[in-house]
Image (cartoon, rainbow over all chains, first blue to last red; front, side):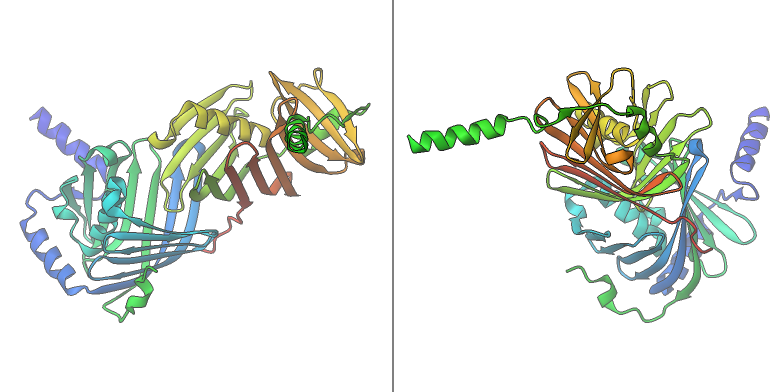
Length: 205
Length: 208
C-alpha cells in the first residue's frame, strides 16, 4: 500500500497535471489513425536551449516542413541561419559557411537522431526499439515519454518527451532532457496540415 | 653547388626567428588590460575547421557569480559538444565533452586558445616589451612559449595576440570591434596545423 502511494505520488510529481495511461491500446489506435491521415505539416518553431548550471537560455526560431515519407526540413532564421534537411537516409546541413551531406547509414548516432526526428513528426515513435515508452495525458494533450535504451543515446539523453495535442494528434512540443540537467525544447506553432509542399524543398544536391 | 646554396638559404630562412628583429623597449605593459574582454554573457555563431573537418554551432561565454568563466559549445540543434570552466584562480574544469573530442591534446589546445582570448596569465612582473616599427609586442613568458599581445603605438589598438616559441608563431588570435567590452569578431588560427576557429557575436533579442 505504501509502495503504491509512493509510486503514484512520484508519477504525479513527474509531469504536473498529467496522469499515466496504463492501457495504451486506444491511444495507439487513435494516434496511428490520425497520423496516417497526416501527409504533410508546415509550421513555425521556437527552440529553447536551457543551460541549467549557467541559468542561460538560447532561443532560436525558424520554419519547419514535413512530408511523408521521411522528409523533414528545419530552417533556422533567427538569430542565425542554419538549414537541416532529412531526406530518407541522408541528412543535409548548411551553416553560414559550408554545406554537408551525411549518410545516416554510416553514422549510428545520426541514424538514431534522424529516426527520433522523423518518428516524432510522423507519429511512429511508439515502435522505436531504441526507447522505452510511457504515455501520460491531461485534458488537452498526450505526453509521450521516450527513455533511451540504446547505448549512444542513453549516454546523453535522460528522456525525450513528445507532447501531442488531442485535437489533431500532431506534435506541439518536443523536450529533450539531457543527463546533465540541460534541456532543449522545441515548440511548434501555426501548424498547417496536409498543405501542398513541393518536393524541391527537401532536395539534397 | 648552386643547388646546395639554395637549400641552405631555404633551411636558414626556415630556422630564422620571426621575432629576431624585435627591439628591446620600454613601455607600460599593463596598458593591455583595457583590451581584456568582459564576457558578462556573449553568444557567438561559431565555425570550426580542423584537419579537413568542419563543425558549426553556438558558443556561449559567460562570467559566473564566483568570477569563473564558462564556455559552452553546442550545435545549432542544441547538441552540446563541450562545457569548460576557467576558474578565477587560474584553474580549469571540463564539465562536459563528447567522446569524440575527449582527448588530452584537443582539450589542452582549446584551453590555451580560449585562455588567450580571455587574456589570462597577464603576469606583468614577468612581462617585457619589444618593438618593431609602430607595433609593440607585450610579451608574457608561459613555460617555453610566449604570449604576445601586439598593440599599435600608444597602446591605441590591440592588433593581434600570438602564442609563439622563441622562433615561430604557433597560434594567432584577432579580436575586433569591441562593443561594451566584448569583441564582436574573434579569429583563432593555428600556424603549425590546420585548425581554425571563427566567432561572430550574435544579437540575442529574438522576436517572440
